[in-house]
Amino acid sequence: MAIKLQDVLAQAFAAEGCEVLFTLMGDANMYWTEAMSRQPGVTVVNARHEHCAVAMADGYARATGKVGVASTTCGPGFTQIMTALAIAARANVPLVVFAGDSPMLSSFYIQQIDMAPLAQATGAAYIAVKSLDRALDNVREAFHIAALERRPVVLSVPMDLQKQAYPFMADYIPSADYLPMPQRAMPDPAMVDRLVAMIAEAEKPVIIAGRGAKLAKARAPIEALAEQCGALLATSLQAKGLFEGNPFALDIAGAFASDFSRECFAEADLVIGFGVGLGAYTTESGYLYPNARTVQVDINPRGLWQGLRTADLHIRADAAGGAEAITAALKARDLRRDGYRSAALAQQIAADQPDTKEFAIAPGVVDPRKAMLELDAIVPKDWDVVIGGGHYLGIAMTHLRGRAPERFHVVCDFGAIGNGLPAAIGIAAARRDGKVLLVEGDGSLLMHVQELETVRREGHRMLMAIINDGGYGAEIHKFRAGGLDPSLVIHGRGDLAGVASGFGVKGSTVTGLGAMSGMFREHQASNGASLWDIHTDDTVVSRPYRRVHYGEA
Image (cartoon, rainbow, N blue to C red; front, side, top):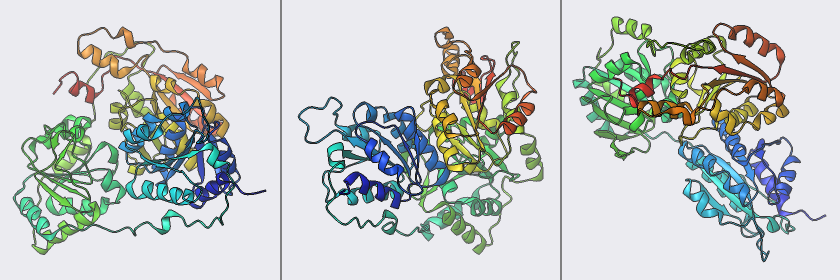
């Protein structure tokens, strides 16, 4: 039997290192998916929604650093993934989506649609396979773009072309052989001299590190620089945990900052960003440090971003290499400053609390902040924590502590909800050890609740903590802040534990504090997945929301 293009393409994907394929099959991708299932070392995960297949691949890529692989059929199967593609593009996640396309030679096909403009509008790259001769080159290009540019790529292959006999010898060279060798971008010495002069004048410097610093593994060189110049340390949301354990670390900058951290930023006279965009959220649109001069050290510095001037000085450099060069220049000039650092300030940082405001809690529900602290205390620090988008994000990211940055996976890059569960499945598929905690909202869970069946079918032992305030929490608080009735977005606390049980996942309801420790022991002993429906008081407003929407100082 002659080998077909679909088989050759499957072999190429396996040669590219694909170990897990997340898919939902239809006419245009099912035969290629079957060919993938026959590749040695490849696991096929069948999602229950196309969006979730891509979101799972997104989570897998975030957890492993590899190129995630997903697949959809054409037409309505493809249009379902626009949000997932946009999330991956905004988060610089490397993905390749094998999108089966409508047949080229059919006079009419009901699911035909022009996929290119849809994919490109999300920020994804689009490559159309149009001939047998170029098919393997197209696969190589897709993986090359995904890895080098760190963004999703859609590879469309017409279904009738997939079924054609492949007439050539399949001699495939993977994209890794063509990727440029990783190199550290070092800063211009003249720019370093300018920053050194600014440091020499600074009394209260602060360093903010972002996702670029996290990817560059720049903790040690940035900490060395901070010690040399007397700077406090902070991170963007996506680099949370990078300086965990450092006595002069303020946790997350911006709207997520504690009151004390915000006071420190307000007094700063120099802010240096490493691998961070310094956009609206991280800087509170520039109001976080109104009296500071700013410097951005980044491999791709931008003077204007999110409508803001990012910095007074931009230095093009890798976060680690840039920090090392600046520290070396300070030492060469025998310049060392105490700056912001003192034993008394370290004690204040150690005693700082993320949120101390008191709320009256109704019977039968819990304060979500205290529930988060209880959850944080019982879940080991080596677990991966997946957090979706919504009001509870501000509580989770300010109350979860003591974890390495690579253990946090925040999938809120496009401001979309409903992505936590599929991302957690992708991360669980990468880890295969059951050490995955999902923190998700009730409304978000219900968007893709069908994937609980995937959790059970795949045998993931993950723990899902659902912050159930009985509605869409973000809208509840925004309505209240604007003096409107929030009843339109309050739908009640349905029996999520019962829903989970219906999918074969152990469900439990939490209506009081103190029970989670025993529940966690039961979860560990069960060797299966658990969903905790945590009923929270919807009057508790997170610190970020109180500041942004209620105008609280």
